Length: 340
Image 1 (cartoon, rainbow, N blue to C red):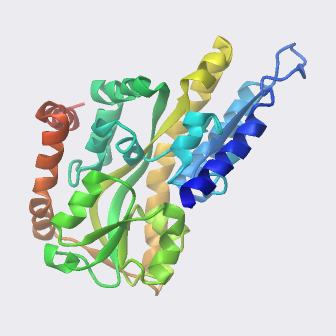
Image 2: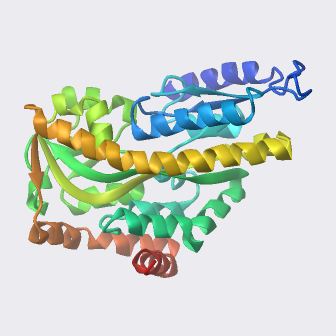
């Protein structure tokens, strides 16, 4: 029933999409107006939401209004379960899905970013994304006529529940919400928890109803979704990275004039750099707000506790290496550790 409803929504959207978006209303310079429809699943005030708003403003300014970006945030148009299908069918033009979204649609190499305890800090993440490994991953998307335009950060994920999660035994028996990712599911099972796949927009409600017991999020997502109101404990595990890929369909990208592609690329490069820096500040500010609130206790892990969790999830790395090849694991580790 849910699949049928999703299909109906896509068909309705495609009916609207059939109207010309490279329209006949000429701008003062004689150029046709372009409308770019962008959908995402998080709140407007999250780092991703703000970065995409920055992108909209830069496109507006650089094109002098000839290119309009219309943003549909917070799963208002499409959610986790149907946004990639919407892009492939042409119901939207641009998405900013988490990197985990690409594994289920045929790009298991992107699951590298889901590996627990792969990165020690943000500098390592940047070296991977900006280097050869990150660019090769974007190029792989052409297999399904997708165009990867760049990466956006949201920082490191932490574990929350209604008890502290500081050791592997603390996870045993918990139902933990995850996004759809074989790697993250394996991670939770390795810790003794039961992974439950839910869309991001349903997470807070599921926590409040005790459908799930805990989840993993960057602080900014946890705070802006008011999860602190339904979770008593946040453990600063920094066990995994959450980032996004800005992606369009090839047919949309090819129909743009070369100058418009260059302009969108410039605006996006500026906005991704701005957004990634802002994400770090937002996570720091929201952590301070979380500490100041009385609803959720915040727990720091010491080096021994972190190493125990790392050891408990070692099999996750081995499982992904068996699926995509040890060479990818070796290369991403080498790129992360390389000196600047």
